[in-house]
Image (cartoon, rainbow, N blue to C red; front, side, top):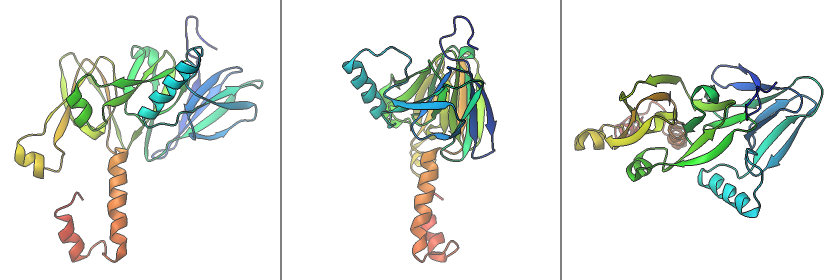
Length: 266
Protein backbone atom coordinates (compact mmCIF):
# COMPACT_ATOMS: atom_id res chain seq x y z
CA UNK A 1 0.00 0.00 0.00
CA UNK A 2 1.36 3.40 -0.96
CA UNK A 3 2.07 5.85 1.88
CA UNK A 4 0.39 9.29 1.89
CA UNK A 5 2.34 11.95 -0.07
CA UNK A 6 4.51 9.25 -1.62
CA UNK A 7 4.99 9.70 -5.37
CA UNK A 8 6.51 6.30 -6.13
CA UNK A 9 4.76 2.97 -5.72
CA UNK A 10 5.79 1.16 -2.54
CA UNK A 11 7.11 -2.30 -3.39
CA UNK A 12 8.45 -5.15 -1.28
CA UNK A 13 11.36 -7.29 -2.40
CA UNK A 14 13.63 -10.25 -1.67
CA UNK A 15 17.13 -10.87 -3.03
CA UNK A 16 18.35 -14.39 -3.84
CA UNK A 17 21.80 -15.71 -4.66
CA UNK A 18 25.34 -14.64 -3.92
CA UNK A 19 27.48 -13.58 -6.88
CA UNK A 20 24.83 -13.80 -9.61
CA UNK A 21 21.84 -12.39 -7.80
CA UNK A 22 18.14 -12.08 -8.55
CA UNK A 23 15.81 -9.54 -6.95
CA UNK A 24 12.18 -10.64 -6.63
CA UNK A 25 9.82 -7.66 -6.42
CA UNK A 26 6.39 -8.13 -4.85
CA UNK A 27 3.58 -6.03 -6.29
CA UNK A 28 0.17 -5.34 -4.81
CA UNK A 29 -2.74 -5.03 -7.26
CA UNK A 30 -2.22 -2.05 -9.64
CA UNK A 31 1.39 -1.55 -8.52
CA UNK A 32 4.12 -1.20 -11.16
CA UNK A 33 7.87 -1.65 -11.31
CA UNK A 34 10.02 -0.32 -14.16
CA UNK A 35 13.15 -2.10 -15.43
CA UNK A 36 15.79 -2.04 -18.11
CA UNK A 37 14.74 -3.92 -21.22
CA UNK A 38 15.79 -7.57 -21.00
CA UNK A 39 16.35 -7.62 -17.22
CA UNK A 40 13.25 -9.71 -16.35
CA UNK A 41 13.91 -13.32 -15.28
CA UNK A 42 10.43 -14.64 -14.40
CA UNK A 43 7.03 -13.40 -13.22
CA UNK A 44 3.74 -14.65 -11.79
CA UNK A 45 0.61 -15.05 -13.84
CA UNK A 46 -1.42 -11.85 -13.58
CA UNK A 47 1.49 -9.49 -14.19
CA UNK A 48 1.35 -7.70 -17.52
CA UNK A 49 4.31 -5.91 -19.06
CA UNK A 50 4.50 -3.13 -21.59
CA UNK A 51 7.53 -1.63 -23.31
CA UNK A 52 7.53 2.15 -23.30
CA UNK A 53 9.79 5.05 -24.10
CA UNK A 54 10.73 6.50 -20.73
CA UNK A 55 10.17 5.76 -17.07
CA UNK A 56 6.59 7.06 -16.87
CA UNK A 57 7.36 9.40 -13.98
CA UNK A 58 5.93 12.36 -15.89
CA UNK A 59 2.85 12.67 -18.08
CA UNK A 60 3.70 12.52 -21.76
CA UNK A 61 4.48 15.97 -23.13
CA UNK A 62 4.25 15.13 -26.79
CA UNK A 63 6.62 14.13 -29.57
CA UNK A 64 9.45 16.50 -28.60
CA UNK A 65 9.59 15.25 -25.02
CA UNK A 66 9.59 11.67 -26.27
CA UNK A 67 12.48 12.40 -28.65
CA UNK A 68 14.39 14.15 -25.86
CA UNK A 69 14.00 11.13 -23.59
CA UNK A 70 15.19 8.85 -26.40
CA UNK A 71 18.25 11.06 -26.90
CA UNK A 72 19.14 10.88 -23.22
CA UNK A 73 18.90 7.09 -23.21
CA UNK A 74 21.15 6.91 -26.27
CA UNK A 75 23.76 9.09 -24.56
CA UNK A 76 23.93 6.75 -21.57
CA UNK A 77 24.34 3.74 -23.86
CA UNK A 78 21.11 2.12 -22.67
CA UNK A 79 18.14 0.85 -24.66
CA UNK A 80 15.72 3.60 -25.66
CA UNK A 81 12.90 1.48 -24.19
CA UNK A 82 12.01 0.53 -20.63
CA UNK A 83 9.63 -2.21 -19.55
CA UNK A 84 6.76 -1.53 -17.13
CA UNK A 85 5.49 -4.53 -15.13
CA UNK A 86 2.05 -4.10 -13.54
CA UNK A 87 0.06 -6.41 -11.30
CA UNK A 88 -3.32 -6.58 -13.01
CA UNK A 89 -4.44 -9.64 -11.08
CA UNK A 90 -5.82 -10.24 -7.60
CA UNK A 91 -3.57 -10.52 -4.58
CA UNK A 92 0.19 -10.08 -4.43
CA UNK A 93 2.27 -11.06 -7.46
CA UNK A 94 6.02 -11.32 -7.96
CA UNK A 95 8.39 -10.47 -10.80
CA UNK A 96 12.13 -11.14 -10.71
CA UNK A 97 15.07 -9.37 -12.33
CA UNK A 98 18.55 -10.85 -12.79
CA UNK A 99 21.98 -9.26 -12.51
CA UNK A 100 23.79 -9.10 -15.89
CA UNK A 101 27.24 -10.13 -14.56
CA UNK A 102 28.84 -11.19 -11.22
CA UNK A 103 28.24 -8.73 -8.42
CA UNK A 104 25.59 -7.57 -5.97
CA UNK A 105 22.13 -6.06 -6.30
CA UNK A 106 21.86 -3.13 -3.89
CA UNK A 107 18.41 -1.99 -2.72
CA UNK A 108 18.30 1.76 -2.17
CA UNK A 109 15.48 3.52 -0.32
CA UNK A 110 15.51 6.84 -2.17
CA UNK A 111 13.55 8.59 0.60
CA UNK A 112 16.39 7.90 3.04
CA UNK A 113 19.17 9.41 0.92
CA UNK A 114 17.51 12.69 -0.04
CA UNK A 115 15.66 11.40 -3.08
CA UNK A 116 18.60 11.32 -5.48
CA UNK A 117 21.35 8.87 -6.46
CA UNK A 118 24.02 9.29 -9.12
CA UNK A 119 25.41 6.06 -10.55
CA UNK A 120 27.41 4.68 -13.43
CA UNK A 121 25.40 4.43 -16.62
CA UNK A 122 24.90 0.64 -16.55
CA UNK A 123 24.16 0.27 -12.82
CA UNK A 124 20.37 0.72 -12.85
CA UNK A 125 18.38 -2.54 -12.81
CA UNK A 126 14.80 -1.72 -11.74
CA UNK A 127 12.79 0.62 -9.52
CA UNK A 128 9.33 1.37 -8.21
CA UNK A 129 7.07 3.17 -10.66
CA UNK A 130 7.42 6.94 -10.25
CA UNK A 131 11.20 6.85 -10.10
CA UNK A 132 12.74 9.27 -12.58
CA UNK A 133 15.80 8.27 -14.64
CA UNK A 134 17.83 11.05 -16.17
CA UNK A 135 21.39 11.81 -17.19
CA UNK A 136 23.84 13.70 -14.98
CA UNK A 137 26.56 15.65 -16.79
CA UNK A 138 29.84 16.07 -14.96
CA UNK A 139 30.28 19.77 -14.19
CA UNK A 140 34.05 19.59 -14.62
CA UNK A 141 35.43 18.66 -18.03
CA UNK A 142 38.47 16.92 -16.52
CA UNK A 143 36.30 14.59 -14.47
CA UNK A 144 34.21 13.86 -17.54
CA UNK A 145 37.05 13.09 -19.94
CA UNK A 146 39.33 11.19 -17.55
CA UNK A 147 37.01 10.01 -14.81
CA UNK A 148 36.61 6.43 -16.02
CA UNK A 149 32.81 6.47 -16.22
CA UNK A 150 32.80 9.28 -18.76
CA UNK A 151 31.17 12.67 -18.94
CA UNK A 152 27.66 11.28 -18.46
CA UNK A 153 26.33 9.42 -15.44
CA UNK A 154 22.80 8.30 -14.56
CA UNK A 155 20.67 10.22 -12.07
CA UNK A 156 17.83 8.49 -10.19
CA UNK A 157 15.19 10.58 -8.41
CA UNK A 158 12.25 9.42 -6.34
CA UNK A 159 11.02 8.41 -2.89
CA UNK A 160 10.62 4.66 -3.38
CA UNK A 161 12.85 1.62 -3.79
CA UNK A 162 15.46 1.47 -6.53
CA UNK A 163 17.79 -1.42 -7.29
CA UNK A 164 21.26 -0.98 -8.75
CA UNK A 165 23.75 -3.66 -9.75
CA UNK A 166 27.38 -3.30 -8.67
CA UNK A 167 30.21 -5.50 -9.97
CA UNK A 168 32.14 -7.79 -7.64
CA UNK A 169 32.30 -6.99 -3.93
CA UNK A 170 30.49 -3.87 -2.70
CA UNK A 171 31.91 -1.39 -0.21
CA UNK A 172 29.62 1.27 1.25
CA UNK A 173 31.37 4.33 2.70
CA UNK A 174 29.77 7.17 4.62
CA UNK A 175 31.84 10.32 4.10
CA UNK A 176 31.71 13.15 6.61
CA UNK A 177 31.72 16.78 5.51
CA UNK A 178 35.11 17.52 3.95
CA UNK A 179 36.30 13.91 4.16
CA UNK A 180 38.11 12.81 0.98
CA UNK A 181 38.32 9.33 -0.51
CA UNK A 182 40.61 8.55 -3.47
CA UNK A 183 39.40 5.74 -5.71
CA UNK A 184 40.32 4.05 -8.97
CA UNK A 185 38.09 5.77 -11.50
CA UNK A 186 36.35 2.58 -12.67
CA UNK A 187 35.54 1.41 -9.14
CA UNK A 188 33.00 4.13 -8.38
CA UNK A 189 29.53 2.60 -8.71
CA UNK A 190 27.21 5.22 -7.17
CA UNK A 191 27.10 8.17 -4.77
CA UNK A 192 24.56 10.54 -3.28
CA UNK A 193 24.11 14.05 -4.61
CA UNK A 194 26.01 15.73 -1.75
CA UNK A 195 29.31 14.11 -2.76
CA UNK A 196 31.70 16.23 -4.85
CA UNK A 197 33.36 14.22 -7.64
CA UNK A 198 36.64 15.20 -9.30
CA UNK A 199 39.88 13.64 -10.57
CA UNK A 200 43.57 14.20 -9.89
CA UNK A 201 46.83 12.97 -11.41
CA UNK A 202 47.97 9.56 -10.16
CA UNK A 203 51.33 10.45 -8.61
CA UNK A 204 54.42 11.40 -10.60
CA UNK A 205 55.14 10.62 -14.26
CA UNK A 206 56.78 7.27 -13.44
CA UNK A 207 53.76 6.14 -11.42
CA UNK A 208 51.37 7.27 -14.13
CA UNK A 209 53.18 5.37 -16.90
CA UNK A 210 54.33 2.21 -15.10
CA UNK A 211 52.12 1.99 -12.01
CA UNK A 212 49.31 0.09 -13.71
CA UNK A 213 46.69 2.16 -11.88
CA UNK A 214 45.86 4.49 -14.75
CA UNK A 215 46.74 8.12 -15.31
CA UNK A 216 44.18 9.55 -12.91
CA UNK A 217 42.39 8.69 -9.68
CA UNK A 218 39.00 9.96 -8.61
CA UNK A 219 38.52 12.08 -5.52
CA UNK A 220 35.22 11.95 -3.65
CA UNK A 221 34.58 14.62 -1.03
CA UNK A 222 31.79 14.31 1.51
CA UNK A 223 29.30 14.60 2.95
CA UNK A 224 27.38 11.67 1.51
CA UNK A 225 27.26 7.97 0.78
CA UNK A 226 29.53 6.24 -1.72
CA UNK A 227 29.18 2.74 -3.19
CA UNK A 228 32.39 1.19 -4.53
CA UNK A 229 32.77 -1.92 -6.68
CA UNK A 230 35.72 -4.32 -6.86
CA UNK A 231 34.98 -5.54 -10.39
CA UNK A 232 34.01 -2.90 -12.96
CA UNK A 233 32.50 -4.52 -16.03
CA UNK A 234 35.12 -2.87 -18.26
CA UNK A 235 37.87 -4.60 -16.27
CA UNK A 236 36.10 -7.94 -16.51
CA UNK A 237 35.63 -7.53 -20.27
CA UNK A 238 39.30 -6.63 -20.76
CA UNK A 239 40.43 -9.77 -18.91
CA UNK A 240 38.14 -11.95 -21.00
CA UNK A 241 39.52 -10.41 -24.21
CA UNK A 242 43.10 -10.89 -23.03
CA UNK A 243 42.43 -14.52 -22.10
CA UNK A 244 40.74 -15.27 -25.42
CA UNK A 245 43.90 -14.13 -27.22
CA UNK A 246 45.93 -16.85 -25.51
CA UNK A 247 43.81 -19.72 -26.82
CA UNK A 248 45.70 -19.85 -30.12
CA UNK A 249 48.51 -22.05 -28.76
CA UNK A 250 50.06 -19.90 -26.02
CA UNK A 251 49.40 -21.88 -22.85
CA UNK A 252 48.46 -20.30 -19.58
CA UNK A 253 51.86 -21.19 -18.09
CA UNK A 254 54.05 -20.86 -21.16
CA UNK A 255 57.35 -18.97 -21.13
CA UNK A 256 56.29 -16.73 -24.00
CA UNK A 257 53.06 -15.98 -22.24
CA UNK A 258 54.89 -15.07 -19.05
CA UNK A 259 57.30 -12.74 -20.87
CA UNK A 260 54.45 -11.06 -22.66
CA UNK A 261 52.59 -10.49 -19.43
CA UNK A 262 55.54 -8.56 -18.02
CA UNK A 263 54.48 -5.73 -20.30
CA UNK A 264 50.74 -6.23 -19.98
CA UNK A 265 48.12 -5.81 -17.29
CA UNK A 266 47.71 -9.25 -15.77
